[in-house]
Length: 366
Ligand SMILES: NC(=O)c1ccc[n+]([C@@H]2O[C@H](COP(=O)([O-])OP(=O)(O)OC[C@H]3O[C@@H](n4cnc5c(N)ncnc54)[C@H](O)[C@@H]3O)[C@@H](O)[C@H]2O)c1
Image (cartoon, rainbow, N blue to C red; front, side, top):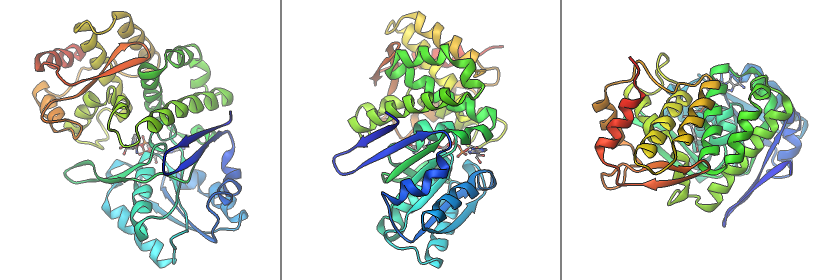
């Protein structure tokens, strides 16, 4: 099946994954959100590379298109960017049925989605993700929002897109470090849900890293299917959607302590790779899962040039304190996602602090 269908009780949409899809964007959207006007939000890295193709395709389908660009990066996922986009939408008389397009990575998807959730109390939006992370994770599932100076993703909403249009060719311009970061999320999907996917990535890694077109489409489509299934089972994260946080409770602590958006620290994908190793080692130490799961994970992450141990990890007490502040903490207890075996995880809420300290310390190399 070339498309993935995401069906919720109140809404359903299609996620298209193809090479060269930007050229078809207008025709695909016309069938779902017909209107005479549309707005594209993109950052200043993505706009010169893919903005024209998206705009042209929408114009050919009869939309008059307004483009708003913002500076690139996590530091610009904020209320200032939101206000700038509100201003553009008002100035160009965008209406309740005018769609907003998020063309870019997760930062743009989250920001444009938040604007779409709130402008005129909600307008349609279309995700056109251009990073691997946004394709396999951020663009699917309707979580939108921005950061506050006090922390990441502190304001937001659930606002599902009308359509997700993924052109895997856009990955050709993505910096290699960003691409590898997205692969960390694909490995995560393998560990939490699908041993076959984990093995497939291992077997096809050379083709994936060489950006072989068919392999990229297969990789993205497979991961989108997993993300969509998780969202369909638990849209608002009252249960199993939390499985997607595997590696993230540790990873977010690393990102937060090194101050999020820092350019010289670990990237999100790198922090998640370390986090997956820490969580899996904790599970092995607690005899929840076999040591072979950890060995396979480390071997694959090594092949991806993602970190599996760290020389410059922040102090453990700072990392622990940050874990306590994570918004996923329930009644003061850190909830961890720990592997049971390759392809299955559990939510564990009663891990002793000493086991978490040991997991952090096991990441350290001298
Ligand atoms: N909503 C969700 O469910 C969800 C899930 C996971 C992550 N997120 C959010 O996603 C964000 C991270 O997303 P990201 O990793 O995509 O980062 P990003 O959006 O900052 O993109 C990373 C960098 O790649 C550049 N870029 C993007 N596409 C490009 C392309 N095709 N060619 C060249 N350069 C390109 C961007 O300009 C940016 O500099 C975080 O804010 C995170 O909170 C949201």
